[in-house]
Length: 234
Image (cartoon, rainbow, N blue to C red; front, side, top):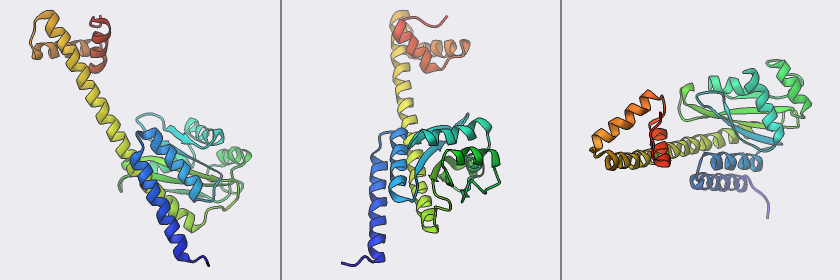
């Protein structure tokens, strides 16, 4: 049986269908980005891959195929310059066809070329049109120069879009879970105060809140300390 373009289209569709299922079933952010990196290796002409997530502080290296990618990332995060930083800040993809000849980040490119990386494609993980919606970057690396074709770029963007939605959803679910846990802790701590000091719920919550403010400690941490030690912070 001869191979036809339709066979390739069906294979790609099957791959992305499996990716969507795996990302949906991933229990958290860590598992989500691990799945994205593995699918990138399967789908594209590359040697290494990784995902960096944006945060309130420095970017967080969330998943890498090997230590080489971690070094590629650390060089940029430490110096706050490079294609990764550019993609995070601007929300636009960056292609480096050959680290031996690209002159936009010469010091970084020289170091990365010595690690064996010749081609780089950084694609933003974005949930909207604004750069503020960029939640991270999918980094793709090849030991070959000019390794990424137009089809590879298209697949990378589709993969990044799937990953963007999955990461945003996983983060939201983790935040919601943490909020539920916090409410449970505060409720348990309030119960301890109500029983010990014979106060009502409003008064118990006011006590916790005051200690939280006076000690500059998160409310859930004050509650956890009370539960663990049966004592409020000094």
